[in-house]
Length: 592
Image 1: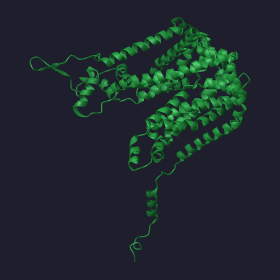
Image 2: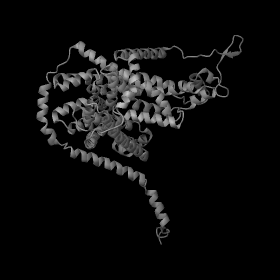
Image 3: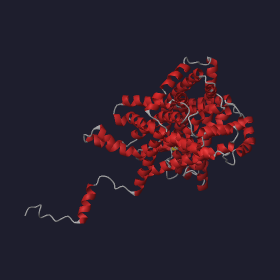
């Protein structure tokens, strides 16, 4: 009998053990299958919306004649005189800068109350998180409509609208950054007897500062594009002039102003990116926790902490100085960092930034009288929007909300494939060539710089009034934002497994599908659902320029002073946005 015949037969237990040993994928569970089904439903909804809106080649071919006619009507471009153009541009930038600064001032205390490790209690945290969600879900146009009732036509309306809506993004990201801080410096300050406010200013805010600066600069770019939309509801600046030209069908002037906005967005994003690269590494280096061991780490930590904490008993050795008699004596404690070149540069940047904010606030019309008037009329204005109502248009609102959802789904689907491809090509760890990655990063930057509203205006003229223009505009806009998010997620993948596969001789395609994509998959799925969330709000705004959906009802209700209908529209959009956001959080948690 051979050796193979002498082996004992496999029992059911042994068989199952051998099968389990050969299994390379985890057995799918109920949550994973449910999440996959939810994503499949979303994909099916996008395909259904794409077909239902008749987005096909034939539609674009039929619009070719309109595109040629529009080109003849917009050329030659009619730019305003240089002094007038510079005045409009400065007015817009002043509103954007002041509104962003207002959002930072409001977001910091809200974020501290919303963060789990700095809140005053569970009720405060719930209320702060609710404020952040509400500010993010309510369109900035609605804030502008309410502010217009208080401040009238002018810059203050735009400042309040941009500032309040931006709290949703700045507050959320800042609260997340606060929850991720290193608790060591704060614990040391608490042990030295520091109070809550001293702990926040001495240990929490310095660590959050890099994230806060990056978020504020990114929000500045977004607010510049959003300011064009606010021009359609009475906010002064280049957006208001653009809206006036569109209403007069003066496409030569409208497209000239649109080109100025486009170039300004490109320049603004490039400058803000340079500022982030210049400032944030210095700030991060000051707030980064030392990773060394032993005496060197203790000395470095002692130099980074306040003197009172550095001399706390049982924690760090107090600094001493050699006396003339050969002994040691306590050195005079330093209460501030030395005035070296880095500190001088930071101080100059800070002074220039504060001066710019002050000048912008003055140009925007911010004054104590305006704030006093707003405080007196806040409750009457709030009463205009309550209670919600439909004014007999409930059925129309539901139908148009459905159209808005169709536009959002179709726009997300249109931008999905190009965004993923561009994101993959823009990820340096995937393509392996820095030049190729930089080139496609530039392409994504150029697409992101085009405001969706300008795209919608052009497409409405070319394809006609209706949801087709809105879906195409959102599809092009999705390529920029989603492509950047996908590229960032791929580049953030841990390099260890990638190097291990490369060491075994695997090709880049095998590394991508075997290591990079599986680890980045949860983040990519979350970004796609976030893009759908953004597109729902954007589709509401694009309805203002005739792109279809519930935004048209929102603008009409504001024009005829039916503010209860405005509130109803906001609540309907809020419900859909919260549903999509909840789905995104759940899916990311399942696939994490």
